[in-house]
Length: 266
Length: 224
Image (cartoon, rainbow over all chains, first blue to last red; front, side, top):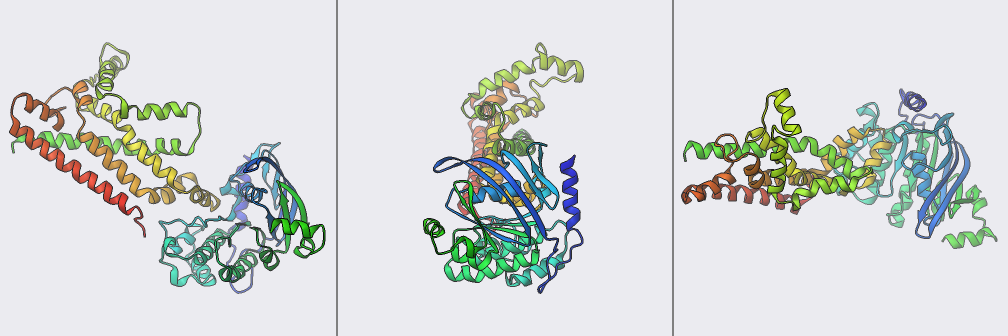
């Protein structure tokens, strides 16, 4: 019952939010995300326990940084409701998304999270325009058109994803994630498949998407320069444990012992 | 071509058509459960569905005949409550045909569903879409070659069905005498010309269906 009510609240909070193009936020509720979870996961190095306890507030763009198998993607999946943690509690803007003690586990549909997958997961049977429009909870062609203008997709609106380049796919995936007016934006290595020039260019698109949403964004990245370009804060994960949390400047100080950790990650 | 010949071919088409339609309706939910859900005895369910691939048709036909008999539970229930006898009837053959053709529909659909990247389903869920909407709008359109293969394989298999039909339905013109039975019957009567006519039609239909499947699987990507 509680799950249903939560889902309704979430949906209600997003209705009637005008799409502000040109600086203003997309729906601008801000965000307060409280995470305290434990999850046993299987990595290439064996069984590891993911243990995260943190709060993310305002319109923070938090970068999850660490080795492969550190638990970055698992944490995003847990937040999206795609993976159920073993125990803990996740609360977003006073709405409980997960509480193992009270047996609450809101579905991905109820959480309204904009999740950008590593492979972008654009639907091959739909055109660019249809992919974006499919994401809307309430149909609004004008908003789809605005998003296409914003991400420079107008010329591609009738193309299918298979005909798009990596950078174009990334822009469509960002526009689609925003079309759902998400509470939270989760980006799983969005630029990893792109070349250096394209990465630099598309970092701006991610910034744009984050500013439009004006809520919390979590970004998984292995690229230190990307972290400095985009993130307002960094959380370093190592073997499922948070080993560092702070501003990029503080986390990646080129002095021991952080220096050693950075070099290890690189 | 006489009326018997045309009626036999029409009956064959009717049996194959209804079997395919019924299997298409029940095949999707079964394939979905097998592709995406874990449940106890799943391996047993999969094995049972695949049994017709290895089981002699006469074995299934024999069990169906026993089940339809008014002297046994199911057959008696049908007689007492619905005054219906399924043995030697089109409906009886149809039920047997549906059971015997299950793997030809389920397996291509299941393969089609499992070949779709998991991230498509998950992306749809995070965009607020239900499992049903995801199934209709995302999964089905991305597995059309598998659906066409499933439909064509089921239809083609039904057209050539012999063992189950003769065990359950016998050889009743207009009711259970399908083309494969007619070929056997005409050969037994040494009427080779009629047997040749039936055989040629079945050969051509099977060839066309298989050509369709191979040409679709050759293209694979049909949206782009």
